[in-house]
Amino acid sequence: MTAFDDLRADDLRHVWHPFTQAATAPPPIVAVAARGATIWDADGKDYLDLVSSWWVNLHGHAHPAIARAVAEQAGELEQVIFADFTHEPAIRLAKRIADLLPGDLGRVFYSDNGSTAVEVALKMAHQYWRNLGEERTVYVAFEGGYHGDTVGAMSAGRSSGFFRAWHDLLFPVEIAPFPATWDGDEEVEAKEARALAAFDALLAERRGQVAAVLIEPLVQGASGMRMCRPEFLRALETRVRAAGTLLILDEVMTGFGRTGALFACLKAGIQPDLVCLSKGLTGGFLPMSITVAREPIWQAFLGHDIGRAFLHGHSYTANPLGCAAGLASLDLLLAPECQSRIAAIEAVHRSRLAQFSGRADIARPRLCGTIAAIDFAEGDEGYGASASARLKRTFLDRGLLLRPLSNALYLLPPYCVEDAELHRAWDVIVDVLDGL
Ligand SMILES: Cc1ncc(COP(=O)(O)O)c(C=O)c1O
Image (cartoon, rainbow, N blue to C red; front, side):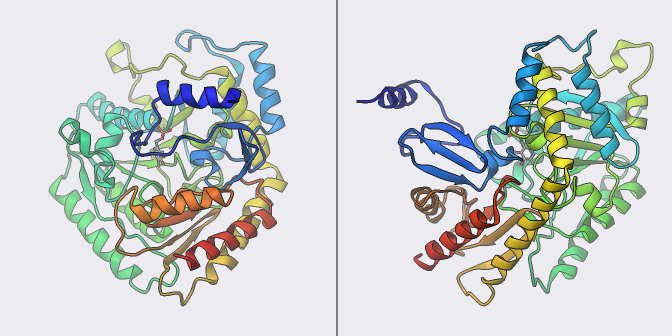
């Protein structure tokens, strides 16, 4: 009996893990340390973190520069109420993010996680129209979209299939088709044309009622790294503008370099009205998120009536430790070494994905910046499907932290991952898929 056995027993007795069926899941792995792209468990086994620990870790685990920034901030100001008070890390981070985003996206609202960043955007859009004297209550989201676990985010993500237990709790959201595509997809233009025609029809039917259109730009994460082309997003933006409604981009996963550009909106060349960011914001150190609004949205909330203000906030809003981590993470992200790692990861992915062409058991190879995905075991549908659960265990046994989403196998590594580590991971993937 070791101290870790006691810990494991207490975990099983007291801890409720997310997205887990405790009756059948194997006991969780006790992580004791992590550096770079590697996590060690209590038995000394190592795992290469190829999912950036739920897509949050940008620069590798326990990066000393971020650890130092958080420690220094903790010694000065660990937390302060963010109504009536402000502080330097929050101001500096807001300014830096505003400078990086396109156009007049310059008003930064802090919250705690990706779901609340989306919830804030939905509430802002609703109240924006109300403050302008218009009742616009309809949202349009996309088939397969996932936006988080709060009620508004679930309502917008209802088609992702994650929320059947709460179906009766959700409010109606119009769901438009998403033209998912991949390398060598010959149908892409036809699919986009159909999706845009359906979108046009929806906007015409709901003329004057749509508060906002919400989309994960370039890559839908949780529904299996489903990718669309920048061309589709640009055509969508044109239609949103013509309809006079708002465009919300959920960049919770795609932000901070994941798509090869700093933000997906920059890569696609589109100007959103509201952007939701989280995950990579603090480099994976602290739970924090932001919703960034364009100037006209901010202006619509000004007035002498408190009821015009955005009466929403969270206890830990703009936590100084999170902001300090965010500033340190941005420094690392913008450094030339990190930018060249991002390009190198994309190059390794591209060369390895090419090896799957001609394999009948692997479909839809796709790549967007540092995110690579393939589909395996066609016909084995559903989150937690048996093939994907088996694959996850096999990869863990072989020292890779990979979590297939239904029948999509993807890599979304921290940027510090070395080419050799990435090649080793792809070698293991090929070996495991060969044995399926
Ligand atoms: C695109 C997107 N939006 C929102 C969320 C919700 O973020 P969180 O889990 O931090 O609430 C996620 C989480 O995976 C996401 O991928």
